[in-house]
Image (cartoon, rainbow, N blue to C red; front, side, top):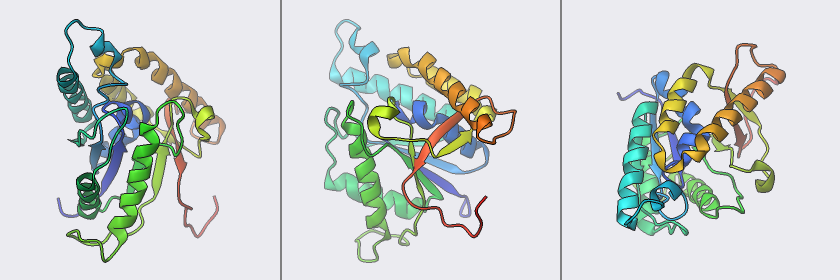
Length: 240
């Protein structure tokens, strides 16, 4: 669809997009947007505890499990997904990955971008994903960057909520009502069988942010919400 609007999501690990932005992904997919997830790592070393507890597990088998789980989750949410296999603990971003991400920006021309917070002392891979997302956004805007397609304009970037926001210097600035797609998000979370311990945590967080959304002027019908922080100023002709 040539006129279809799009959203770009950059996830450090295979499950991050599910917990932190699954509602936003499902919501915009339900509105007819093309939502594309770029997954830098399978999270094969640090975020696959359930898989590593199984006898005889290998790194390649963990990657297969995580690929399958994330592919299933993305499908449930209505999104596309691309894996870069850039390692885990640490993620190492190559020039090839940088060029590929610039090409993704140029092709998609996203309405907005979702990715990780600037800081996360519990997982340095998350700031790595943030950094490369912002870097390649700038490169994709540059007329002289050697990539096909129209140079990118200036899509806003929203940072999804880290697991421990207080320790990441992160504050919610946008509360997005995801009540209408919560069941879809929950089904996608259930796909992540290597991290079952997080299902309840992120359900509770969704309820908590939903309560805060109502208290900050949102509709009384809001039950679940996701929180985001802006990177760049919002440009508007009205304050409301």
